[in-house]
Length: 79
Image (tube, rainbow, N blue to C red; front, side, top):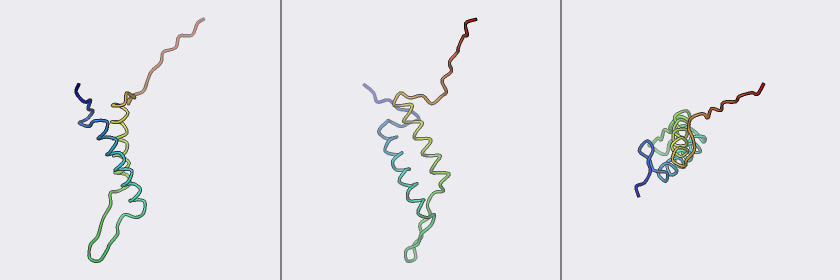
């Protein structure tokens, strides 16, 4: 049996990457830059991190059987 993929990711990979981006968001919340000695680290912007989190959430939903598109229901009223 082959492993299901969506946008090139397996469910396990997508979950792992989602956790990574959530960790990045927590780190970015402490500050965009920091410097130790002569070395400086610049973190991703929160907007970019949120886009990645939304992307991996979509991948996980698709692979886990969820839906990424709206569900439409037609109702007929009895007269």
